[in-house]
Image (tube, rainbow, N blue to C red; front, side, top):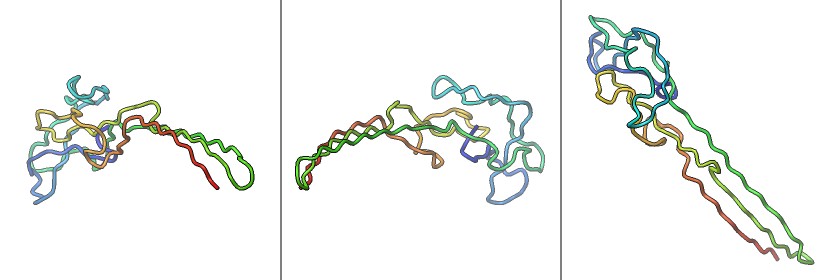
Length: 144
């Protein structure tokens, strides 16, 4: 739901663990909404809260997953003999042929105004995979 193996954090250090981030409390059941950017939060943010008292939150480290992504590349090659050791090879290569976008992980700080919102593209946040836009290459190769 959040990062590929990510955590929901809180800025305060209620548990007295100097230098370490606290984890959020899960106070209800959460659902993934699938919203991106200005459409709203990727998941139901009302299910999380900052822990109170001197304790850690009840969520675990690396418990949630972000939107992920997929990519399909395609290539085709055809070789034409031209006599002797000569040949002509025609190529077409296409990267990300369905042109699917890959989004970054949602903001994971419970007290942030953008908590749960995806504001970026994959590869720009938390090491998410980045697939470029659709690219098509054509080529000819003559070997002799």
